[in-house]
Amino acid sequence: MTIQEIKESEAKKLVPESMILETKSVESALETAAGLWKLKPQDVEATVLDDGKRLFGLLGKRMKIRVSTIAPLIYLQARDFANSILSQSELDLEAGIDDSNTINLEGSDSAIVIGRHGETLKAFEFLVNLIYRTDQSSPKIRFDCAGYRARREESLIHLAESVAREVLHKRAPVSLEPMSSWERRIIHLAIQDKRDIMTSSEGEEPLRKIVVYPSGHTERRRNFRRRRPRSY
Image (cartoon, rainbow, N blue to C red; front, top):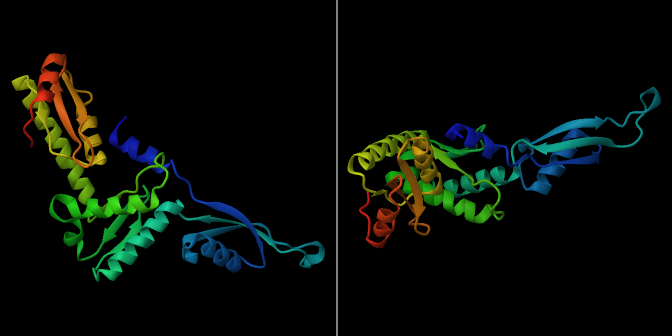
């Protein structure tokens, strides 16, 4: 499975919230649903299932309307929380949700929120997941800012290829710096089809890291674990 296929798969794991209301108007249905979900009315869309009209156009019962969130609820709530924090921090940034359900931060203060090597953005993402991702089976809430994730992904792929060449040349394991689960997965996927190379995630969060081994070197791998590997 490619990196893009995994992204699309994760985006499909959560679906928009939906329910059917009986109310006097579409506007009333949108306001009611938004209040129940603690969202803005523009984050909800409505489909009229029954307009309530009867014979000769006379109004009978109230309208039956299906209301749905425009994106999975957890992402909308996370977006609103992010906007609240950004506003209180007086940063010129605004959070929005793209088609892959990634929360994008756009504005002139992007460098501030990204931080050195993306550490500030990662911390922001960690905090939001801690608050809203109560079900560990659901996909993580991903954050991006000014295209940082695409640049980081490209950098990690180049790093993986470079490390793979080094491991094959030296026939010795190489340990990378601690990374997030998303970054580690990029490394795993970039190397998985290369011959004579294997990868392993080792250690505990937040210091969990990838070690790249030459295939078939089981004894070396055990010895390598006993001594501290050098980091990149």
